[in-house]
Image 1 (cartoon, one colour):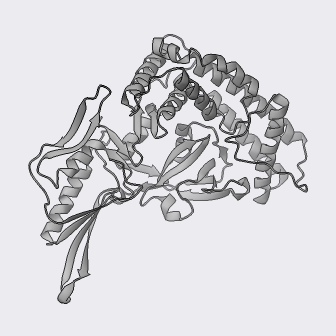
Image 2: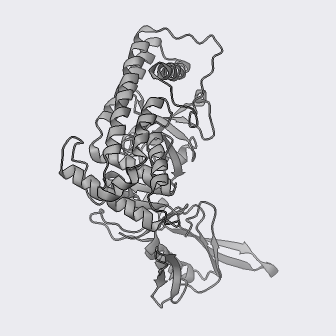
Image 3: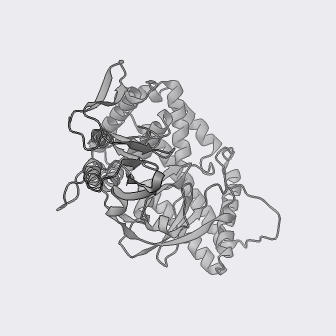
Amino acid sequence: MGSLLSAVGQVMILASTAWAGQPASEPSLADATEANITLVTAGFLERSQLAHHPLDTELAGKFLDRYLDDLDGSRSLLLQSDVKEFAAYRANLAQAIHKNGDTSAAHAIFARYLERLEQRGAYVTDLLRTAKFDFTGHDVYAFDREHAERPRDLRAAQKIWRQQIRAEYLQEKLADKSPDQIVRALLRRKAHLLATMKALRGGEVVEIYLNALAHVYDPHTDYLGHEQMESLTIAMNLSLFGIGAALETEDGYCKIRELLPGGPALRSGQLKPGDRIVAVAQSSEEPVDVTNVPLAHTVELIRGPKGTTVALTIFPAGAADGSLAKSVSLVRDEIKLEDQQAKARILDLPAAQGRTLRLGVIDLPSFYADMGGRTGAEPRSATADVARLLAKLKKERVRGVVLDLRGNGGGSLEEAISLTGLFIRQGPVVQTRGLEGEIEVGRDTDATVQYDGPLIVLTSRFSASA
């Protein structure tokens, strides 16, 4: 598979070994797979990042902190004593990874996370069944706990859990639900979250672990496991079903990174980049909590057959107060290929002396490429489509071309190079410097030029960095 680029210079590390079928408890084969992937990923990150920073004790400490935050973004589950206990990993974590790809820390910490999750589930279940919530006081709860201290002990954690469930109860109450409906909904939501996390297999736990490592090196570098790689293939092939939103995780929340042209999410006008998705409901069913749930599982809940309804509970971008949470219902649809493909239009602009200036405008949403997986379909690429459009514009005798790359989030680097070749005869397009100082040049080697007239290229801060 070719190189990838994105609006923020993102690197995606793809796991080529399918390990999802191995439960966490199965020995040897799963352990060896995890170790090999961990060694390869750590080595790749050390060599590929601009700073070429080795995985040393300092970086390993940041890695450990990031993994804890990725599991417990609200800092409400893991206790200060847990974090103090895990601090013992700091001194030898880098050495253990370098030596044999050891992932025991990932599993030990995740096991404690599950233990606390179960404790919260038991406490909240008892609270919902026995307590009467009163909202006549003036107490305050801060939803944003990104920089908050972790609970001192279990009693302190229970105080946070009580406030969290009261806040969720109030949101349901504001939706005009009866007390019985609210209790049933919240009980189901918490039970589903616990069941989802307990069902994670060993490889999925390590995916969270390695993604934390990637983010320590660069916040725009992601580790993609097998399921995420399939999602990437679907997106690169311009074959999408769902709501038309690119998602990412941040501090335990599923966050909308981008709304895709032509998708239900953009058409609705109710969602925007930066919105945080906290629950997902199928049609008229109860919402499922997706806070601190792996992104692949959230994506699986949001995807579905064309014509079906999905309801998202969101915190709008920039809203710190959970009382602003709202529900958005969308009908899943096929993201039309023509909305994602390059497209062109002609503008006839008034010029001097009553003349008309004819310009061709090509809109290119991404550098897409055929990555396989599309049976019975013609290969598709950004370069081939733009070449076809340029030929049509030349027939229309345009005086100049505007190539609109605003909002182009990236895609295949090879496509970006070959597309540049439509406008130049031959030569270098992009270069990278390796760990040892060696320079690799991406060149256009095709001497043919599709268009050599006046050209304007439009970019924005959302355009791919390359």
